[in-house]
Length: 384
Image 1: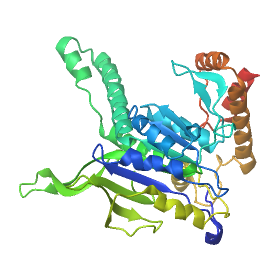
Image 2: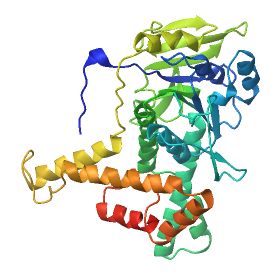
Image 3: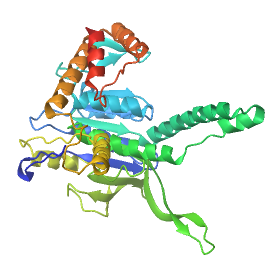
Image 4: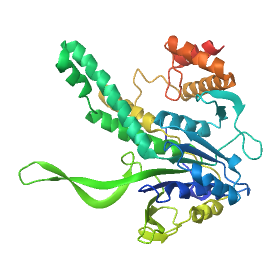
């Protein structure tokens, strides 16, 4: 469903990607979000999602020495893209964060900010999309092995033939497309969170495929550096910056693009500071928020529906299957909110037991993409 707005009333949000070699200042610059001020003058609260396993731990002392209250920074260590997106969803849905025990299970203690209020992020940092890309690909490789095991069983393979079939499995074309889709979806999730965000990535050489005179193709390096994460994730960010060090070791930033116009495109800045972008926030303070939902998955469904109508009937005319109303969609959202509220109200042990109970019953434990009212009501009934 399309959304619209008047351009004169919209509050601006930062959306950046910082990329470069290790130790070029990406994490340090991203965490300068902690120096930012909200329109009411209070400091930013930053949710820091860390797939790099300790990328800013050594910098926290410097932040504190410079006046940052570390109670306004909540760090989550995870190398799972799924878990990263779950935390982004918590921000979008205005949910409480619960402190985790040593095993990663939620406790009953709600995470609070420096004012003692439930932690609500003003900005999200995803520091290490390169790692998320690697773990996502490895997950698909393992899935491919299972897929080939099924094929080996079906073909009756044994011995070395079976081993080669399974262990030789790699990602297929559709798997690569899935990875790219997930990367785009991550950025759209961040955009739909309603808060400022920065993602970081290592860098890699851009390559292009050329056709040789004999008809074969070859991959060649173009000489340009690009983010080494999910392909195309830089397309939707407002600001793209490559971090590097010059010959004397000074940290520099190459501004690939900056739609906020704080800095010109294609310029190099020595010793860059993120605080330059505070002006973007100040300029639109007091204006209304406009948050676009991440409807990438829904858009795919809409395109499929339009294609179905083209086959079965005329576009713009109802078909026999067009029975979903806006009220029905609203009912679905109400049920989802009720389920989530009941789930969040459970103590951690009961929450885990309920998850196992739902899985045993063949019911979903996540509800973002569930559109079947009957299934949602079954889930709700389990909580009741």
